[in-house]
Length: 234
Image (cartoon, rainbow, N blue to C red; front, top):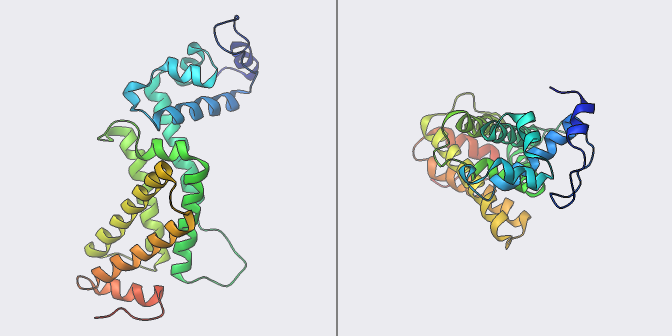
C-alpha cells in the first residue's frame, strides 16, 4: 500500500470545475470514506448499476484513487460489505456488566437493542449488507451475509442456554432472524413506528414462534420457561 504522503498527494485538489477540492487524508481515513460512499450507493442500487465513477464522485475522490486502493468495483463492494458486517458483529457481542446476570429474555432484548443501534447509526451499511447487490448473494458476498446470520444464530442459542438445537428449534430461530432483518429494512424505509415499540414487537414474535414450536420440540417448552414467568399453555 502506498504511504500516507503519496495518498495525500494523489488526493490533492483538482482543477476548477472537475469536482470539489478534496481534503488531504490518511490512507485509512480515505479508505473509510470510499467504503462509506460505496455503502451509501450500494444500499440504494444494485452493485451492477454502481460504477467506480459514481463512488469516486460521491466520495470526492478521483477514479484512479478508487482503483489504487481497491483494484476494482467488486473488490470495493466486498471490502465495504465486510466493513459493515464487522461493525454489526461488534455491536452484537454481549456487553460485560458488573451487575447480576440477566434473564435470557432481557439478554435477547438487549442484543436486539444493540442490533437496532447499528441499523439506526449505520443505515447505509445495514441496507447494503442485506438488500443491495446481486439477488442470489453467491460467492464471497453471500458468505459475508451468511456469516453474520450464523454468528447471530449462535449468539441467540447461547443466550437461551441451548447446547444443540433440534431441527424445529433451528428453523424457529432462523425464521425470527429473518423477521428481524426484514423489520430493520422496513423501519429504515418508513420510520412510522417508534423503535422501542418495534423491538418489543420482535421480542413478542420470538415468544410466539417458540410457543408454536412447543408442539414440535420439547426444547421450545424448556426455553419458554426460562424466558417468561408463566409456562406456555398446552
